[in-house]
Length: 397
Image (tube, rainbow, N blue to C red):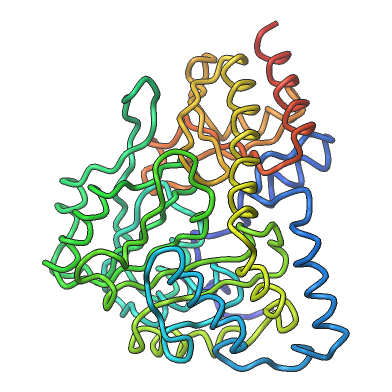
């Protein structure tokens, strides 16, 4: 115990305590509730990918430190994936960096590119590590809020481009984007992305794009921001094997960017984990080369699961926002006669035997997110059907 009166925790992290995910997962265990809070699958990914990891372990590939930038096989596979999917050509030796999941990629990018006092614009609500990483870098986060919009017969969250433009100041260094977007399920369209690209070029901004759900787009299409004019040289694109292949515990992510940006991110990354997931890197290299039929089947399976849960939530009385991508559904609880998402989620396991996450934890403007609650549908269909039935029973008696 220190004798100093100074708090032990760095003041930049003082606002970040135990995450809501830990709290709600513990509540799920205590009550025996179905956990639709944290976004991880309850089944493993392709058997051939798992066996590739086993082979690498047995063959002694990756059991010692892999190369700092990642094994050549994986960097080559990532570059090939970007070229095949999006016609984006990256040099695997100078423009690809393997990271310990997307979370480390985000941290390394922000630590490398943001100076104390720089402003970082992020789309609110946002993945909780964004705020912490901006804080660790000494930056100032500037949220631009996605708000509900009714269109084409369904509600979804959309970006106000005028609000985004107005948020940029002379202190803005970087835009931190996430599309497909967690937690709202929004997928930015070509018009929105073109406007963002134009703004970034006009104001000479760097952009970090979190595209980990790129293969889970149900409505519309995923278009990498780096494909727009003037963006390849100023965009750090982040991908992940965990979301696409359902091996979240392997923690294999990556960065693709121009050489100077990759060098900068690697300079920070090398002092975080240095390297990780050696044998799994070989397996992910094989996974990225799976035929298109895998990616199509994966997406359609998740689409069906989305529809099962969305139907159950609608029948239980929630307002359900359209999920165009990711494996999350955001709902509005006000039709149920309540508006405090925190209180609702803390009571939900006892009332309905289901765990969800209050979206307010993803907001700086907590009031904006207060009535919204997120459910994850990356679970077995039977689990989702049981959760839906529990919710219907609890709210339609």
